[in-house]
Image (cartoon, helix red, strand yellow):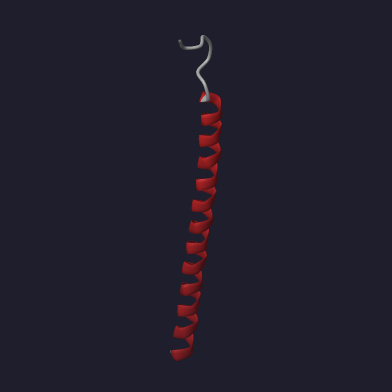
Length: 54
């Protein structure tokens, strides 16, 4: 016999999903900012090398 009332664990599951999505987005943003920073450094290094050789 099923209990009457609200479904079990739906609120906890939705909160957990929300928190996990936040965590994943945070990690993605950090990785993207790291990649962007490395790209900027590569460009800067390439410019310095061109100035030195030319």
